[in-house]
Amino acid sequence: MRVMLDANVLFSAILFPNDRMDALIYKATLDHRLVLSSYTINELLDVTKRKFPAKVKDVELYLTRLPYELANTPKEQDVDLFKIRDIDDYPVLYSAIVANLDVFVTGDHDFNDVEIKKPDIITPAEFLEKY
Image (cartoon, rainbow, N blue to C red; front, side, top):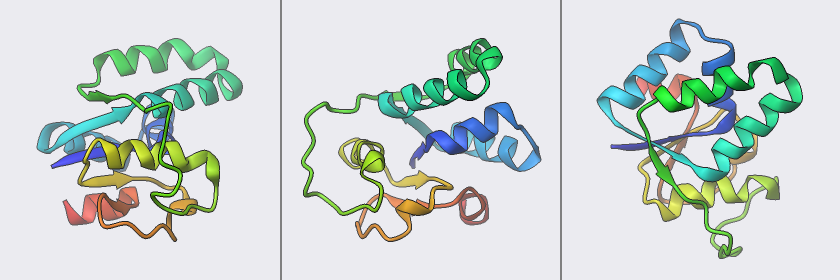
């Protein structure tokens, strides 16, 4: 199964590791195929630079060691594919859809009301419970 993690999940897993987040990364990388979008990686690095500038090198190192497939976020996007409350999140889910992912893991509540068939949008807790 192909799984994408949102930037907020990666941010928590990298900068605030705990047993639950470690288990999520373990399952996503060893039991499934982890896919990260270029948009998500850029967002993760931007937030880290803004909030924890001393941790940027740690995040970059973590990403070099994390086994994942890179999905390029297209610059041109079909803006009518789905509706989402926060338009800044559109490229994140759009990347997951065009990469044909099975599951998108996020803690962002702006994705709760999105109506799409695939990928399944779930929280980290739901991912661990389900998979």
